[in-house]
Image 1 (cartoon, rainbow, N blue to C red):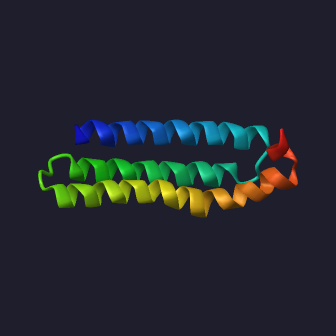
Image 2: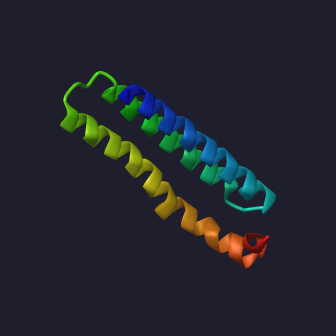
Length: 96
């Protein structure tokens, strides 16, 4: 069950990143390549964390692993997405 949760989380995150990158491309975000690289790094870290956690039986450590995965996504929203938020607002793309 936990393995499926990790896999589903990674799939949903990858889907979110792809949609986000399409919006950034459509809005001509000047730093889109850097943002794509950032997403790839986050997905790699999430995959590595998931692999590390797959064989864990201890619930406490398993929860710590899942928290770590969630933190990758939160870091993207807080750190990575704020920069393009202003771009979307300043270009009027956010109001479409």
